[in-house]
Image (tube, rainbow, N blue to C red; front, side):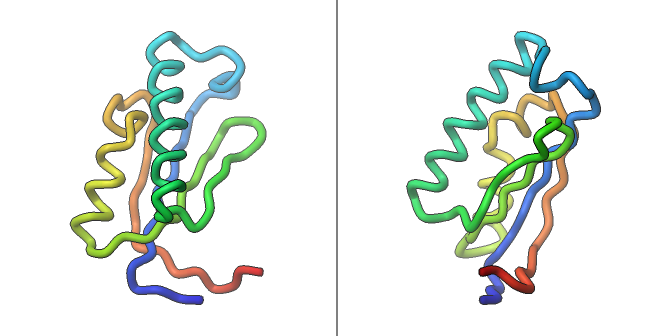
Length: 98
C-alpha cells in the first residue's frame, strides 16, 4: 500500500559499541527516543520501525498528514534533537509489505 504521506528517518550511530557502551548523553537521548517512538506508535503514526542488531542503523517509517507534520515529528525525536548520532529524513515509498 503506497501513500503520499509516508516518511522515514534513519539513524547512523557511527560506533560499533553504540548500544553496548553508550555515553551518558547517548543513553539519555536513546531512552527519550524509545519513549517518543512508542508514543508515535500508540498514536497510529508508525508503519514500522527497527534497527540493525549491531546498532549501526535504525529506521522509523511513519505516516504524517503533511510534509510539515512529518518534519516536526522527525525534528522532535530526542535522539535527533540531541545530535548524538547522524540522521536523515526523507519521503518514503513502500514497494511491498506483507
